[in-house]
Length: 308
Length: 300
Image 1 (spheres, chains in turn red, purple):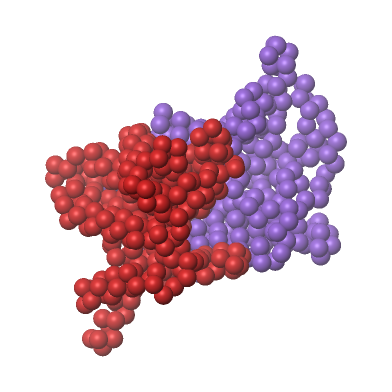
Image 2 (cartoon, rainbow over the protein chains, first blue to last red; image 1 turned 90 degrees about the vertical axis):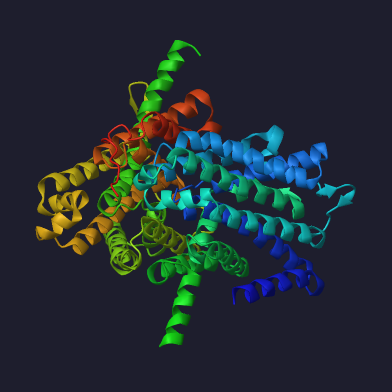
């Protein structure tokens, strides 16, 4: 069942650029980027249970580092993307060292404050980020191959997304993933089991920042322009919403949430006020009637149908 | 900077800071009130504030209602919307999962809905100005100049705070609210109707936000984004420890004055980022806030 779904999704992804227009491919690129952002959010909130509201900031660091290194230093794009991810992870580790002494609401607010401060930096550090004028990003390139259109970038975006998905599954099955989940369930119990709590938290935080940074790198593959306005709290909330609507704590939920909710928000793009009302209503209804997310809700219903 | 100018800036910063700080303090009070009883940071506080401002604007300017009708109607409407949200939505969310993350996301949902609704009405598209109800003639306090409007904002805010503190300290319902904040189960065993108290707290918090909106609206241009002012209130609540009502008030004044000092002494561009730096500094140096108690570790 699962394998069939996965193969179906894979076939769809491969076939997509052959029978659709550039816009649909652009949308697919964007949704895949958001999928990676969601995977990062999934690691820190879904697996390790630590609230982080600075996702957009790490995403932004990834975009600026990858974009600038590609544009000004001509690095091949896999290198730029990796640089973006590593830069975001380093900043994440520094912030995490300080912020992870706090818990719950305090951690959420500290990371929120950091996110807002970073957006201010993006907006005011004119020399590097172009400030309020935004930053033009040169087309990504690899050994003379230039990714000029969305369709050119698409295969690489898909590959990056699958690498990150594989990485998430590996992390979740490895010892470190188990220690994340132990941490989520009970910090005290995890400590008693001999899990270095502080180090595990920091690892979750850094990994999540790394994912967001790589997502930023993916963004530079198909986009030529970035403005700090799209790197604020609302982006973090969008990602959080996707993860929660899909189902907090499951990888499938994070991926599915990114795609379903991304499509909804794209469909409603033309009417911002309806978009906001629909967003809000969806969030509230999900929290009221399907708190475990769309997929848990659906499989629950299916199970009931099957077994009466 | 010579010494006279420094003194002038110092006085002006404190006076203006106390005025906006009193509004931040009201908003912080409403956030902390809700957090103490439901353990939910209400991310919709800013949008409740914004929607209340628009409601008053609509009644006063577009329906030409007299002041003594428009203001009570706004306050009652805010109370009802917030109380119904608690009753109709949050109760079900808490029943469905009980995880604080879900409650927080439900408040985010409310904030989106309110913002969308205000945009739908069409009033939110262009910045509006709210009519000043009190003259904007300036008066001098020391060397600092403020308007009569500013002074009345400050006085009204202080009166509202005094009323809130009186309610918490001396009335039966205030004691019930505090009891629910300390231990909901024990409060219920003592005969407190939990759901009623939660509805009252949410309603009252919305009324306080609405008052804050009525006070500050004549001083700013109203847009559908004006709820972002709530970041300052969150900063104030954090400075005050997030669990303490007096802390929220002091935090409001600290943030208001800091904001003005940063604007006067450093640069007006830095004003936006100042509260976040303040939040981070407070959280790093004194994570429990200025008025917070000791951290308690949750047992297994």
